[in-house]
Figure 1 (cartoon, one colour):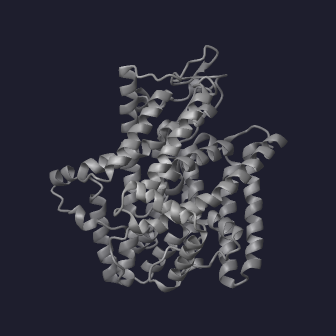
Figure 2: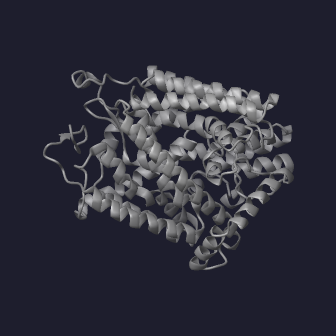
Figure 3: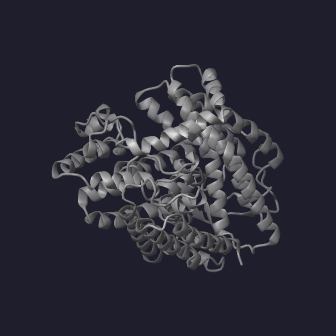
Length: 538
């Protein structure tokens, strides 16, 4: 049995156990119905991954599909079961929410089947037949010439990391277009942590691992410290989550046989992650408590404030009780998981809130949502482009999220809180069941664009580009659903191309100036060249 098959079968077993446990935790009709819907949807996804080579031929689009399932359904089932909580608890309309999510997952799954089998079939993986395959598309040829599909040297990755860190430090005091440019470069902060990923793909020929790991330890500590100083959890989590998701994707694609030693290693890794998750959860809660003084104290005092709460479990417990109480009193709440780390990764509650809000819309509410949705679509463009097109949209009037706006229309909630919404709820409110058709065809385009961030070697193996690795968390969590329709469009047509641009600029800069740090990539004479020139061991 391969590692991939073992993991998928294990997830099926866990989902089955979670379904049985939910019947014990809460035997109400609503909870059992919700658990059965999620179980069926999750098993369908896992069987698709088990019975097809989708993860091997189209890794990023398939991982986005898997991420949709995990972040909206399967993750909720497993996470709530671990904490002994009813799946339907703290949801406004659990049955309607899970039916909607399962339905859109089924649409995306059908779209992916069509995309793989008819629109973007995978060529034969054999080295003998590979030369007979049609040449890459013009877009792929252009991206290849720009260097997107080449493994950058460690010097380039370190430069990207410090550029991203610099952008993170100064973006808070910037405004306008300059701030948006800096925000677009922040994803580079964790680029040095791709070095372990390339070591997995390339092997020791890539760099000297021991020296790089020591540098990574210091760099990671610096990023965590700056995240505490700025009270921004995402900058702290993104690197670790990116590495974890890449490792998961690698394991799901591994055809190596399962061994007792590997199972023991995975078990120990699980215990270590479980042990680390406890203090990380407390730290995340402490950052939420300390957020009340953010902006009013120095960076040093912000760190001290966070550590003060981190060392006082009674205050953290009080914060959790306040969140639970608020969930029953406020018109809007985001409380679903007891664990704040799970809450950061799962989207179930946000879809539930938004679907509930749009179910209460009047015709005038739908008309206002339509106009605002159009304005938000225009706001994706930079101001100079809007002026050139003669579009009268003031971005300052749109400084709110879709979650804010749906709550505002439904219950009169305030704007500007940047609550998380749901593009699925937004689309259903605008087009009704017709949105399912739009979503189906939109998924076809998104799949094709996502898979441009991976490339096929002459041997037939498909690898991820650097930008694909850096974007893996966003692709996993928001590849097929997002806070709003304009956010989904922006991710695919603005953010990802923007990330490709910054990557190409920095790698070109390194090559032109000959900026090669000690410990950079060292070609191995025993290695076999890839389709794009970087050596890999045979």
